[in-house]
View 1: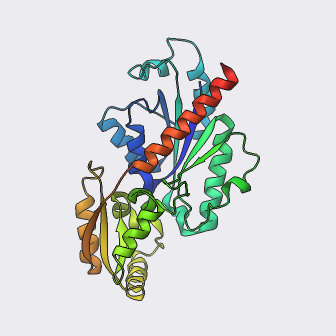
View 2 (view 1 turned 180 degrees about the vertical axis):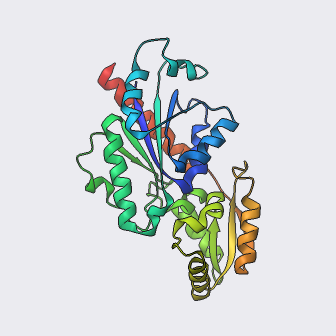
View 3 (view 1 turned 135 degrees about the horizontal axis):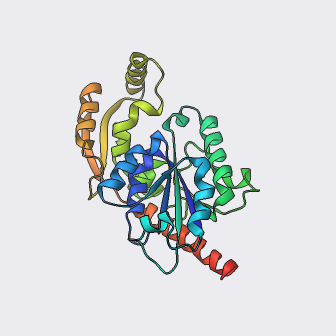
Length: 283
C-alpha cells in the first residue's frame, strides 16, 4: 500500500483542501495534529471527508497498522466510505507561516520535514513554490532522500514561483496579470493571504508591523489589491478581510479569476507515479 506525503505551506490550505476533496484522491488520510492544520481539519469535517489526526511521531506506527490485513482495524473502518481495489495512503503536514520570515529558516524547516517524512513515504509532494528561490536547489541539496520529491509545476513545466502563481495558473499567467496592472502598485490576495497576512512576516510588536507595512506601501506605491476568486468559496470571510485591509491602507480593490489546475494536475501526476512505481516493485 503506497504512501504519499504532502508537505504544505499554510497559505496553500485552500488548494490542499481542493485536491483532498477530489474523487479517489486517497483511501486513508492522516494529518499531522498541529495548530497549523486546525482550519483544514475543520473544513474537511464540514464536508464529511474522514481523516485521522496524529502526532508526527505516531505516523510510522499508524501506517504499519493500516497496511495490516486485519479487516477489523479501526482505521480501515473509519475510511470504509473510500473502498478501492488499490489502497493509497496520504499523509499531510502543514508547516507554520512564520518560516517565511527568513528564507534560510524556511529552507531548513522544509528540508527537515522532507527528511523526517521520507522514512515512511513512497513519494513526497511539496506544496510550495520557489519562495524567493529558497527552495530552488531542493533536489540537489537532498540527494540521499530515499523517495522521489514531486514539485508544483505549471503547464510550461516550470516550477511555480509562489502561491500567487499557483492560484493564477502558472508563471506566465502571473506575469500577464502583473503586466495588466502596470503603472499601479498591486498586491494579489488569495483567501488564505487575506486572512493570514499579519502572520507571514509580523514582528512581535503589532504597531511596528502596521508601520512597516505602511512604509512599504508608500515606498512601492501600492494602491490596489486584486482578489483571486474561484468558483467555490473556501473562506466565507474573504470579502470582508479584503475590504478591511483595503480600508486600513487606503487602496482600491479589483478581482481576477483563479484556478486549481496546477495543484490538480500535480497531485494526479504524483499519485499515479507513486502507484505505478509501487506496482512495479511489489506486484
